[in-house]
Image 1 (cartoon, rainbow, N blue to C red):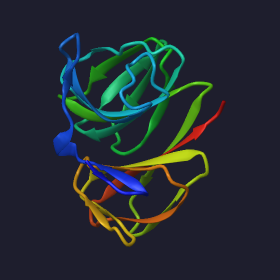
Image 2: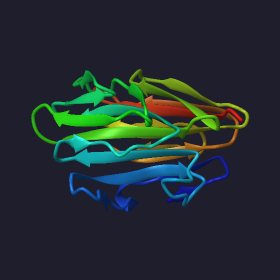
Image 3: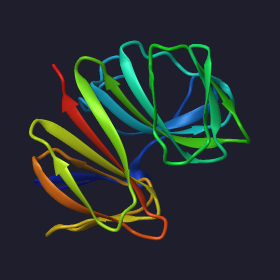
Length: 197
């Protein structure tokens, strides 16, 4: 991890994989707050999951979720009895962690990107940046997490940082930054967290 006064760089190569209890896949936590909080105590948590088999999602009462397909043909999520096909990459799909949710893989394993926030404490917006240059604003009392999902990207400025696939940068000082998702296939998730309590 590289740290400056304005950001932390979180390299994918330093991220451990945690196997699911049901054996259906593995999860790699990108970042969370508070740091080191368990699954029952986080305010927000961002992760990447390798989903190898179909099955139910773990319930997360009081949590708002956004899931984004990154690799693979996609999945059909049945959320409280209503099926939603998630087969377009880089298109966020929000749903409630309170819902009974089951996953059916459409054609083999997938990789998905997950953003979870504790309702009543934190709200998140998930945007996917693909343009040559994006201005990223970190709001007062807010935090922004950048995660390169495809290709590579550069966080500009005096301390320019290049991000390979699945690398991330955590920005928690108010201000603006330039982000360059490198073409032709650069896609970077820009997640903005704001406290709501």
